[in-house]
Amino acid sequence: MWWAIVTLGTVGYGDVLPHTGWGRFLGGVVIVCGVTFLSFLIAIVTSLFVDANRERQERALQVRHDEVLELLRAIDARLSVLEQGGPKSDVRS
Image: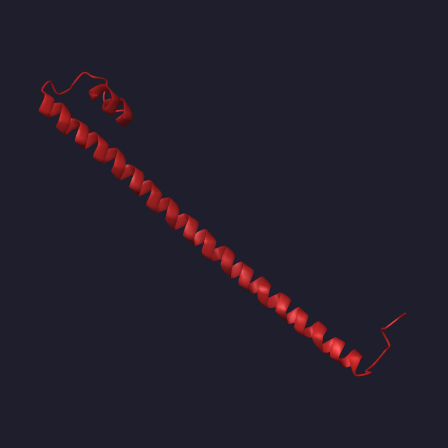
């Protein structure tokens, strides 16, 4: 078990190691806590980058959405004019 935990944590070369069971247990707990802490730290930083990117994409989509709505309103206004018998200079059959 000690070998598995030390290999997981990639610590030391085995030149300095605990010889008692309690020492190995405490060393294993420290190694597992260190690996867990680094994993959480990396996950939090990655999550912050992902959230920032998502917010940037949502803002860009909102701008594009507003542009499309503007174009649709302009098309709707032109259609209303045509339906009411307005200018027919650009309409070809």
